[in-house]
Length: 114
DNA sequence: CCTGTGACGTGTC
DNA sequence: CGACACGCCACAG
Image 1 (cartoon, rainbow, N blue to C red):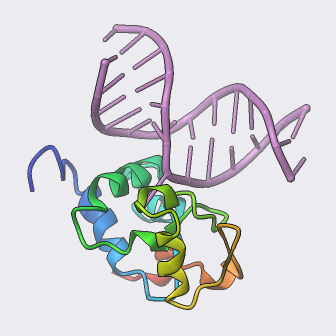
Image 2: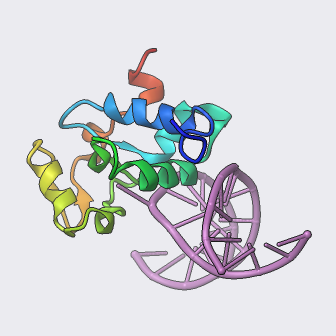
Image 3: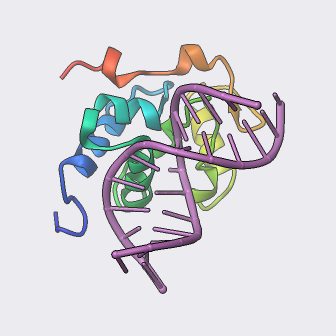
C-alpha cells in the first residue's frame, strides 16, 4: 500500500468491514464510521469507497446511507448495477429505496465482533 | 491559506 | 415533507 492510498488504517478498516458484510444484508456509511470510532466520519467512508471501490473487489453495493437509499448508484457505471446486485442477493428495492431496511441493516458495531 | 465539494448524518424550521 | 445549516475530514484548485 502506498502512502497516497492507505494513509492511516482507515482505508484498510473500511475495506475489512465492507468485506465482512453478509450477503443479503447491508450497512450504512455512518454505521461503519461509528464502528471505526474517531478514525473518520461518515463522509470519510464515502470518500474511502470512492477511492478503493473500483480497484478492489469490494461489495460496495452493500453500503447505503442511513435511510437505506442507493445514493451511490451513479458510481457503478451502470445506474442499475447497484440495484441489480442487491436484488440478486434477495434485497428488495423500490425507487432506489431498500424495503424492510430495519431487517436488512447490518450494524458492524453490534453484529461484528473483532 | 481559503474555498468549494462530496457514495453522510443529525437537527431545526 | 423539503430546504438549510452545521459537523465531519480529506483533497483539489
